[in-house]
Image (tube, rainbow, N blue to C red; front, side, top):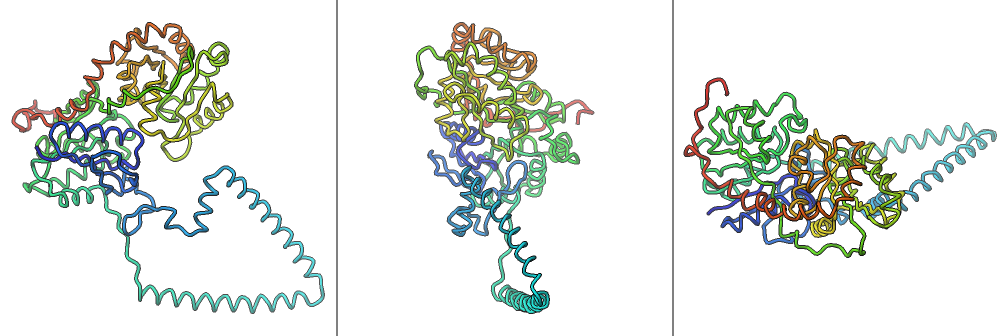
Amino acid sequence: MGRLIILDHSLGDLQGHHYECSIALAEAAQRGGYEPIIVANRAFAEPNPTNIPIIPAFTVDWFDRQTPELTESSALPSTATLSIGAQIAQKLENSPKGQLLLEKIEGSTSRLGAWVAEDLRLIRQIPLTNTAWGLFKIIWGTVRFSGGLVGKVLRKLNQRINPQPVIHNPSFIETVAHIITDLGLTNSDQVLIHTIGIAQVAALSDYLTQLGDRPCPTFHLLMRRDTEDPLVNPDHDLQLKDCLKIIYQRGLWPNKIRFYTDTPTLVKKHNSLSSIQFKQVPIPFRQEKLTLAPLPKTDGVLNLVYLGDARTEKGYQHLPDVVEALWPDYLATGKVRFFIQSNYTVNGLEGPVLAAKLKLSQYPKKRVKLIDQAMTPEDYYQLLMSADLVILPYDPQSYQRTSGVLTEALAAGKPVVVPANSWLAEQVDASRAGIYQDPQDLPQTVIETLKNLDQLAIAAQEFAPQWKTQQSPDRFIDALTKPFGNNCVNPKLPPGIL
């Protein structure tokens, strides 16, 4: 049936949405008779636990950010390539005790400098000291200048004898071109990109136009974010609407490029931008992971769980209010334990998130457990299966798009707490979820949901099978491989839409 190449240029490790989505779709493609290959970012250096080939190739992610510190041979930076001194410094900087040691050394060095300055001041009061000191500085300056000049000449000579190669990190589309050539991809092959930036869509359009009638695979692009999401159009000079119109005018859709999204609302919004028609696809993940045994549990203790790392758009800053409301009657009494995934996948903690994390860290770990490290897929699903109630206090404006955590929680048959006026709230009803209007209502909604948890859990378990079928990764692959309609010819639309 050909090959399915999944280009996941933001895939750098075994955690999170990118890995889970890519592996789930690759395994589904394998079940469907395709030969799957995943092409990841060069940052991906971990052992591959699956039988799906993963090739590290891309030097940029979907934001077009360069993979840091790539060498000429495209090897990843590691402690083995660092000097011993640099390795020691790196370990000290990454260790709390090491940071304290560095602060003490810095303070001692500062004091030593003050002592030396005072001694020099006293020495200069001795007769003829100024003359001797002046002569010393003249001689020392001459030696330093001569040594620097000789060193500069030697470095230039060395550069001419042993010129350093210029390191070129290929762009997104340059890597795509290499993949097509190196893998020998043809019209019978399919390429899926489930996370991509608009500038990269435009570059792909230009590249496929240049190829003309030469053999190439069909590209399937999944656009998961809202059309008004700032991340969709970070470059205000390049709008998604204009990009889609150009692709349609060039005749690339649907023979060479096809577009997908994962909610009816997003299908409608994207279809309003141009003559290109988007298809809806499921939200894929490895559903077999839901069979993992839950964590050992103390009888009578309910597990409240927050998943999705520490970010303001996921409502992490609202969690201290929830803990404070639950503390007297639920947490302090041992009726409930709260597990909170608290690692952060983007550089730097946001201010509200940092403040919330400091508040949460003050509670006893046996009552409020913060999970600071990235979780393996097995640990993640085990925690999910251990949950009695999953809290998703996400920002409604940001989450007009889908949520992988909600998708997994509903498939696991878990009651949830979600915000109104979001995609999350559209997937549930009051029989199996707590739905709140404003963030200040969140703590009381959690309490009311806990009071009715038995009934909500029954309804959630009954709903799970149909939700799992609806979000099957096998259905996703089927949607990609079905004929697009009209024999892959651009449909005629009323004038003025283009």
